[in-house]
Length: 196
Image (cartoon, rainbow, N blue to C red; front, top):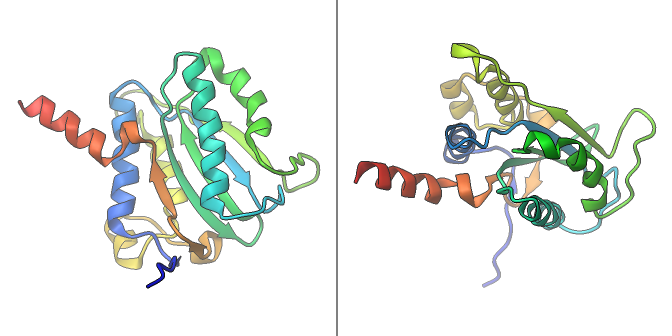
């Protein structure tokens, strides 16, 4: 029997919680998700499955950050909205001294035509600023709410997120994920180690 990929209309609660916990864990281990990269694969005229195209991008990014002694740390989400078409939001940790180089490298990691002219750009890199004290994670919470706009209704209600299904669109295959170092297995291993 052939394994058919499902069209994912919504992000389920388990996947949403994994992404939220991964973002918090990244901050706890000193790898705060301080950059937000948005890439329109459709605008770049990329050919193939979005997960594979994005995977190639993340693989190139990971090699680059390791070369400079960093650890690839990220949370990603794929959407299919009316303006950008199939696109990714990638929240990643970039050490301050690599920030300028990172922004210069992003276009080289995109398979396709990088067009930064006009209203719709192929990619955008912004900084996620962290506050102080009890407000430290407010901006991160805001960007996580934004990428979770495709949550199932019950999960959205539970997490206090306003769904926007027309902007999130329908995606075939996995919609949201994390790097291994902040994923569920890494967090469970860390928790087990701390409990020992």
